[in-house]
Structure formats: C-alpha cells, structure tokens
Length: 170
Image 1 (tube, rainbow, N blue to C red):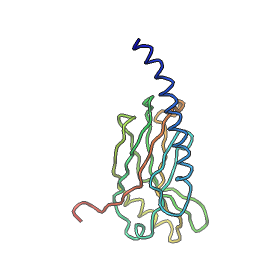
Image 2: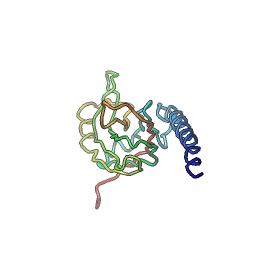
Image 3: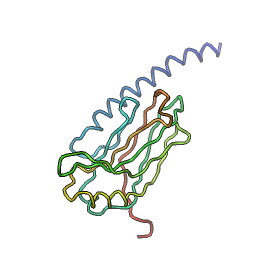
Image 4: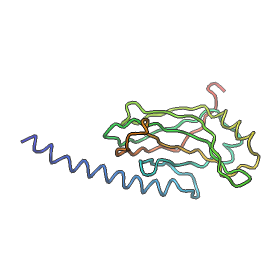
C-alpha cells in the first residue's frame, strides 16, 4: 500500500514544481525588469535565465572590492549542473549596453542554496576606464547549463540582493 501512496505523490510533487516555476518566473518578470527601487531578489529559470540589480550612486563612488551573492532558494529536482555568471553592466554614452565580467560560480550539490563572494575591483576599474558617462550600472546574474548540449530540466534559482563589502580588516 505504501507503494501506491508514492505514485499518488508524484503528480502532487510535479504540480508543486510547475507552480513554483510558474510563479517564480512571474516574479522574475516583475523583479528582473528595470523598476524604481532595488529588487529584493530575482528568480532565474530556464525560460528567464537572467536578471539584474541596480547599483546606487554611493556604491559606484565607493567601488567596494567584494561582491557577496546569496542563492536563497533552488528548485532543481533533476540536479542539473549549472553555473551563475555575474557581470557589471552599463549603458555607454553612445547608448549601447556593455558587460564586464565579475566571475561565475557553480552550486554543489546543484539543488542546495549557497552564498559566495567575488572580487569586483577589476570590474569597477574597467568600468572607470571604459566610460565616464556610464549610466544604468547594474549587477547582472545569468544562469547557464554546465553542459550546453543537454536540454534544460525544471530549474528555478532565487538570488538575493547583492551585498557590497570592503576588504576584511579595513
């Protein structure tokens, strides 16, 4: 009889996953677009693998060297291997969008939340050297499959608002 219960749970779990991905994707569409005020988090899915966070003028002026990111929720029942790429993006004086890589990380295990720190000082130096008229400077996060030839499975990753930090001991 327990075996019958397990099969009855499968549609429930599948339905729950679909609901999380649907509402997560809907939330991404709201949080990922440029809107007034900082987004508290963005949800990346296979349909919407990228999102961004605005960087305020004070942070740009201070150019903190350490960027701390938290992946707060992961729905990845197939444990698909993926990476999260992090960029500093901006609009140049000519109106073109530009990207400066900060770094990338992978979650292990691929279905567990994690936190990571990346050095952002090189990206800020490149931004300063590239354009004194940069506007709409943001931290962009993008989820990519580790094995590009494999099709996406159901994956939803929530990334919290980035935190900027000075060098330890300063």
